[in-house]
Image 1 (tube, rainbow, N blue to C red):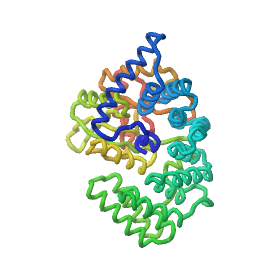
Image 2: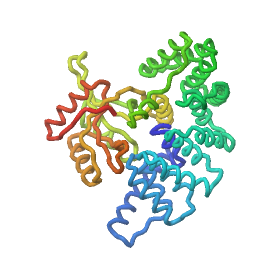
Image 3: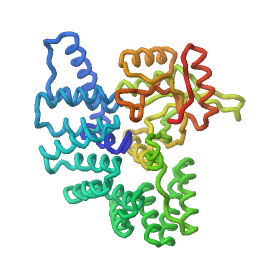
Image 4: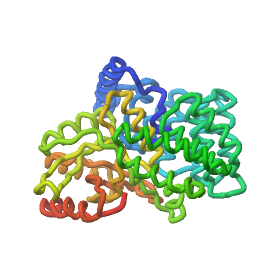
Length: 408
């Protein structure tokens, strides 16, 4: 799920370091080709070039640019199931679920065994509140190609679905056991514990949750540990897992992304900006963030963060993917506040502000404005408290911006 479940599993994403280096070269070549296309209209890109560019834009969270690239690939080959699937991901990330579903459906029409398209469509049905179709699409994936991800997520849905008539604790428990059999780790064990609680087997829920807590203690992950200690307390009190915060947020028509992943930290802002920019230029959603520590005589650090996530579970899955990429220090942190420096409809204006910030060693990041078609919010930093974010806002105000503290 790392950037999201959909983005984490993009087929073209390399998990081997040598392949990753090769992909960097390919990305760079594709960008030059794209620039040549713009400068010299006679130059044309092939289908694979547009697909690669689209994926690069998707990973960079430039969703409209990704849509345009995948649309070019579809113009070249109207039967390109991969292009339809990935364009669907981009529409979904923009909050246009109907267009996303239309693209996933087209991909499935072209390739009825395209499990990623079924999975992505199932996730989007869930975001629309159509739980029947969610369960159907995830079920189809399990018939075609059983996977850890779908076992775990379908179990989660059958336990926490907002509409109780679709909950099925016994089926969720079996799915969770299947996920644990494939990969015994924090995510699957936490789902198993919740499934035991849902079926009333609180003793087994406590046992599984204790294993989760022990794993997190061994890995020194305080944010996740705190969340899972709360669950352990609930299971000891014979209380089932409550509806996740991300679903509650949907009721207010507002998406929130409280969780981020810290990958490193530097004392010098210039170094943090330079390192963050290296990853951002490769398409990774990396940004830097000011951090003031009053307990240590006002020490200032500049942390490097990767992505932003609606739930702890999504962030944890992203950490696993990052560790496969040798980000050994990747850890989830709950930093729900940020500083917004503007909301834009013009890509040119947005890039200008990004460039101005970059010159001052702030690597900003973009989030689509929820329910505002075509609008992008530009944010700086990630902070645990509004007070911490206000310190950054004051600094940005001093350099001529009009910042405001927001919940991300």
